[in-house]
Image (cartoon, rainbow over all chains, first blue to last red):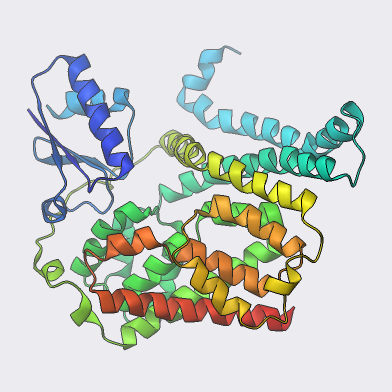
Length: 79
Length: 345
């Protein structure tokens, strides 16, 4: 599966990226985690708040940093 | 009652009610407790420099934190009703003055952080929200935020908080309207209009009230977790000045009769970047020591509303002349507020 963290480099985006990596490790799944910093690419997903979380090209969350537990639930739900 | 009760959906709604009683109890007894601690337990004398400084810090710091926690909790819940997506929809097709008024008010309640200024700007442009209306939003959102309002209420009382909100709103409405009239779309980076903005179905989900409460706690964790240190620093500096700086010391620099103090305060405030949490406790002591209200207000608005990091972020989508026009129009508005309040009070 493919997970993307959308963010222009603010503190929250980095926190989310770390959270995603922890979640992926704990779930022991094969996933490609990518950070998208290019604003035009980010806007392609139509979010109005960063950070954004995209799983398999679907926006599942934007504008806040969820807990690792919530990230795991989101991954399970959208894989 | 079992503790697990608070994990049920009903319990999640009742828990905040219980906590509010605890909150009220602590808030109510904070001042008597501080008095007792400083003047009885530690046996210090009223009016002494050190006693006044300690008293100020031990009372004000927990007081402001308590107020912040309470208000941010409610604001966190209220904001689950106002997503930027909905705000965008509400502003779609709104022209001229009505749009500016709506955008400024929505700027207060819509969750906003300057790091999201760009995606938000794109979203507005894409929805066809006029540039001036977008600016009304971008001026109001950072200037009138919950942290600033709580601190103003905590350190100055509700009258000054209300003055700040109404004048801030007025500036956002008029400045946005002026920028709209100037027709500056040519100074928006052209690639903004060429970018294809996608759509997502997020944010249309139905939330249960217990979910909204969860967002309230999250807001406390995020915002109080971020600003408490600035509050502590601001109040510590304020406490030091409160105890040791002589009364009327500021009158000769920032007093009513020093006319150039207003423009100077605004100019100094623009590059100076501090969040509301750090600056307001310091300004409250400036006023206590003889600074004029209008001058202090102008200084705060300039520091909080016009920040260098936000300009740098906006530079990605706006050309320099538009950034300067933005700073100029808002700066003039703030100065007028400063002069007005120095004249009235």
